[in-house]
Image (cartoon, rainbow, N blue to C red; front, top):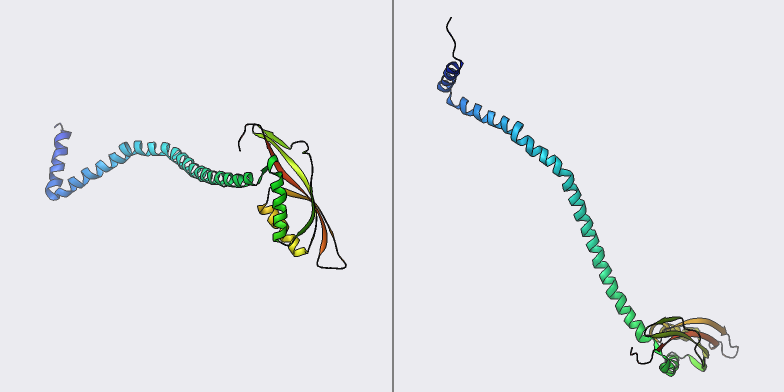
Length: 205
């Protein structure tokens, strides 16, 4: 019995195919290469991508959170700047114990400006217990009582100017009595409390 040589037979078949259509061999080799690439090389790449995908999603989430936090920090910094400006404006409106006469003069000036006719202005002679203390000094509320004549309109403009641009103060009590002889002029009693700063000796504001 004649022994068949598989190697020789395979070569003969390849040669016959090559003689009939030489492109078949090239196409077969390319297809084989693609198959091997998918099942061997690409499998490792796909596995690596599947492992990296959760990490990529996590990084995207972290980056998004970072952008949100950065926007918040920028907003906080702007708010701090705005608050510093407001604090500076408020500090300018706080008078010291030496400036109490200035506070009274300011109230009178604003009253004259808006036809709020002040007949009597009485500040307390002594400061009560401080409302706040720090290393620079103590803050007090100085009660001031006013008696005046004014129309509703003039009184409203006086209060608005006093609370927005005058010394830092708050209105405690308002009493208004109508005047039968002059309906447009009302007797007004007003109690206010002005913030007064008493600095520690040797401390400059």
